[in-house]
Length: 125
Image (cartoon, rainbow, N blue to C red; front, top):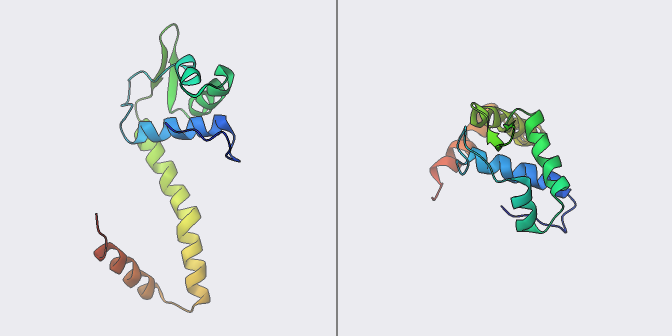
C-alpha cells in the first residue's frame, strides 16, 4: 500500500482505494483477514480512526466485513463486485468521453473500433 499525505484526496479514501485494489489483485483473497486498523495506522504513522473510516467505506460497499473479536475479512464475492464497479467507472470515465470526442471528429463507430483493435494489436507487454 502507498499513501500520499500530500495528495488532495483524503487519506481515508486512499486507504479504502488501496485496500480495494489489494483485494481485487488477490493480495487479500476472499474470506481472508486484512491488516487491522492499528497495523495500517502504525505502518503509515496515521490515526487509527482515519484507517477505520476508510475500512468502513468498504464495509458499506459490502467488500469487507467484521468478525467480532477477530478483525476485518474480505467478503465472498468482493472481487466480482469490485470488477463490476470498475467496469461501470471505466465506461463513465473513458468510453463516454471517447465517443463524445469521436463525434466531434466526425468519426464512425467503425473508425473507433478500428483504432481500438489497432491499440490491442500494438500492445507490448
